[in-house]
Length: 409
Ligand code: GLU
Image 1 (cartoon, rainbow, N blue to C red):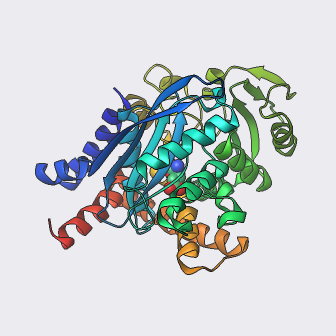
Image 2: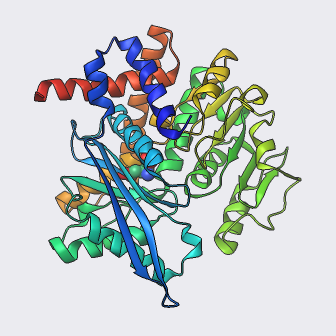
Image 3: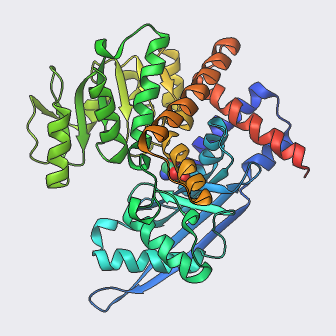
């Protein structure tokens, strides 16, 4: 099953609970626009390189389309479409006035020099500038992109359209970014993990956690959970996983990564593999890296009682069924990692109003938005006896469907 088939599977599950008509299903699954472009450029050594870039605009029923740009060698049309549709449901679940989109370039950004990365980004914007914009489609960071890439995007976009900070979010603070955007996805994962555990009368101080992935999302989630008393016993990145039964020293790990760029050389009680991390005997497992890490092959071995999807699509449908049968609670990506796009919305609002919020306000509004959405998702799941994921899709599809019908086809 590829990424798009997985996304359709989750959609279809919810659509059957909702009794959605086949015509409405087709309308909500079909993307509004798919853009595939050639990004050709001269590399530092004078040779010509050609990359393929995508922007898929899935749905705009609730507002301008919104979603990240991913620079990763696995990027292809299927994955981008799956992630674009996920953004449609995600923005609807947290009830921010956006539709969903996603884009990316099939490239390993680490193989490029800074100058090549900048040139590739600017050339990509040249190709996309007429289909994106503050009221059309607003890109943001995702895997392999960051605030610096967003800075190049806004600068290149403004060459065509004049001053336009709201055309992209996740920008550096110096270029109209929002304080709190960088931490937002990981912080949201932390806040929601805490809220979910409260439903089971389990305080964070009595909880062990394993986090797969120590990039932007995993590291801020680890920091939040550690600061609020949880014992984060395992973390990982491409250099492998670290385990410490007494709890990893998260501030030391964060410092190590900021100095060295990865966990390579970071000392802990035990060095384990990324695969072993997924099946550790912990309370909460947080996959915060790539999609598709929990599969039908390893889902039966998961020993955590709760899985929080900090990454997009980390649990494949077969694995989801196995986890559900084993009474393992899954907090789905459409809410678990929605903190990022929520603070992207706050950034866009500030840009449109030429007014800056302080960090305290951003954090308070983020918590309010996520907790209200979580309570609603929880109530639907409890009332209908369905998993949280289906409840989330019900909320998302319901809101998008109603907007579509009210506006008229
Ligand atoms: N790339 C992030 C996501 O998958 C953030 C998107 C945004 O801020 O627009 O949710």
